[in-house]
Image (cartoon, rainbow, N blue to C red; front, side, top):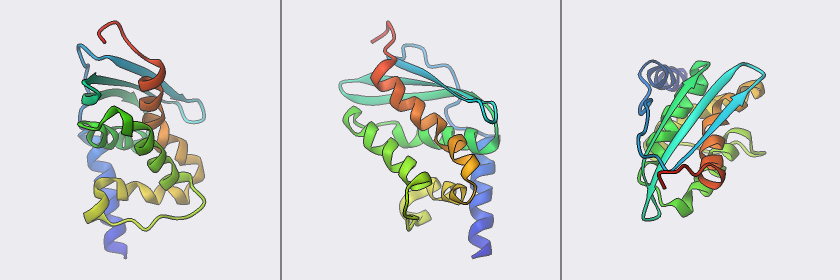
Length: 148
């Protein structure tokens, strides 16, 4: 079990050190910002939706390793996602991290997101891990840009 914990920690550190899709997104159709005043995490999420599908997603963020790693994972998980599924995917991650029942996760099935499940043990860090996901939902519903 300790080896699995070490692997999960390495996944989070990898996403923090080399975040996927941390960049501007010219032509984005939706964007929103998130801020966690408890620890100072800030994120801005950009979505490019075409034909009802998220064709690209990126972010800019400052904050702790968990916040940045989660944002990086979010971009990978939402790219190619039908617009109609975004709310469900965001809710699944929020429930995984803050829901009443601890989920049974598997790295092979759930990918890098399984590494975030350990955040459940640290309630103060849950907002860090959900910040980018909530911002993505906010962008979809309230953050249309002039490009869309």
